[in-house]
Amino acid sequence: MTSPSIYLDYNSSTPVDPKVLDSMLSFLKDDFGNPSSQGHPWGWAADKAVNIARTQVASLLGCDNKEITFTSGATESNNWALFGLIHHIQRKSPGQKIHIISSQVEHNSILNGLKYAQELGIEVDFLPVNKDGVIDPAELQLKIKPHTRLISIMWVNNEIGSINDVVAIGTLARSEKIYFHTDGTQAVGKLPMNLRELPIDILSFSGHKIYGPKGVGVLYKRRKDPFVDIDPLFLGGGQEGGQRSGTLNVPGIVGIGKACEIISQHFGEEMKHYRNLLNQLLAGLKAVYPDIKLNGPADLEQRSPINLSITFPERLGADLSLRIPGVGVSTGSACSTGKISASHVLKGIGLTPEESARTLRLSVGRYTTSDDIKTTIERFKSIRPIT
Image (spheres, rainbow, N blue to C red):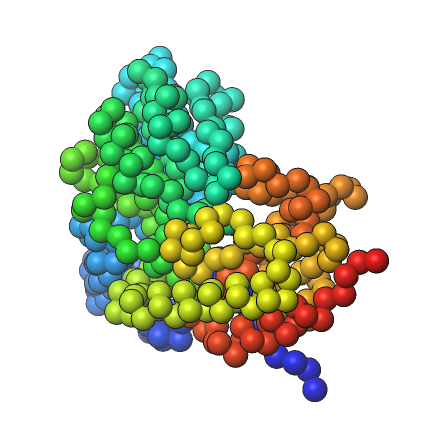
């Protein structure tokens, strides 16, 4: 009899919550109208559903629903935050120098976007992080220039779970009249937030990290103190207030809205569930391998409530993810043309390629149980050292 598989890769993607799926189905079948079609009930139903979803998202984030624009996901939202601002400045003030500050451990949608921006003549500084993967606001302040226009620092790191001090970073940015964007993909649904009170001007996230569908995301843009003015990436029929043209993905939008509503209703109990599972998992792994190394902050309260990044002892060798029977986890390295390549995040906190090859990211979720963790520990015990 085949042992059941255990999914511990919730940082990468989550299953769609059954209630989310139920909320979407009618907009794939009966209520299939285009919300831009305002001359019949099908269009009205779709438009109403989008507005409800916008309010559900805004309620979770603690902002005005007019500050929510739906996108195809965090990659689009991150690119829009960068290039929407760049295009706006270049259009309004041709020839003006633009400087952007980010970090070396951002998601690739930020890193590669900014590397491309450099080819267009934009000045970019990529800040190093400390051993816990966190930006030092004092070091950030030293990099600010008269023509710095944007600071883009992720809230929670997607690989090692470290949480940046967005209050300190945002307060610094605001004092210098610089926009502050944060990739909130691993923060939304995992950390309490009230964007009305936080000094964050632009925030991105995806639906598939919070038990919603893939192919839908959000860009939050502050409308007051300051008003965030960036150009659209897409031009067309003027949907989303002219900010993001294209026929709206109504089922996806309904799904991300419902996902946000569910989190709002059960936030406290879910956070307790995640913390208990992480404590159980870390303690169990330490009991089996006392010399494991936890990457990121040692204090679980200072890191993502769903994430552990662990470097296993050298005697176990590499390719651990392939040697744990029936457990789905992420690795810390990639192999290309026979050479081990460390992830840029692990490299950024000082791990060697060999250490990265022994590093796993384990992330728990809504459907992980205590029995799953017990079984996972038993399966880790089955790994044989490399001789």
